[in-house]
Length: 196
Image 1 (spheres, rainbow, N blue to C red):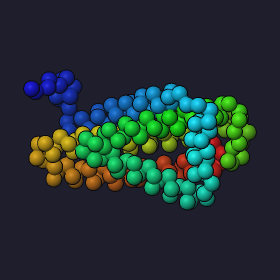
Image 2: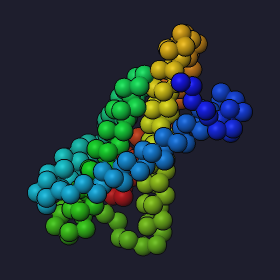
Image 3: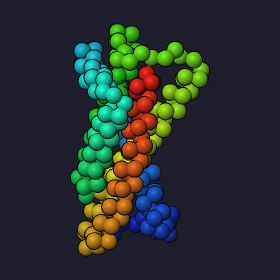
């Protein structure tokens, strides 16, 4: 059985198809993360998750950036595995949502102690914090979406017995996401150290 693809897909170049797939997985990853944030957790479970996250931010800025990069790049690298990487990526996005939900519950309850002093909330600090959060989110999710979409491309090319050529694309994309995640890790580490 052959699938009948929409016209925009049939007429698109290979590069454009890759971009469409990355955008599609970006949206899917966002939705899966939001779904994870709505998983009900007890106050104790939320506090435990929050403490685990907070304990990781006690390092110096350079060590924290390196730790964030190694963690995020390792996760992203696993997302490149043909077909399995997609399932793993969606699990990671859902798990991220659970952690974010726990963090929001603890912080909104008012029963938490910040691991770093938080700056006074003024319009300018709120805008800066929001800009940093959106930047880190976008950089990380573009990287993860790239890994998940390449997992599909690799699987498809393996089935077509054209995997050698696709391996070159994969290596280029891995280099690109490594660079993106390095920038993201530095921004995230500096944001955490600044108390955002």
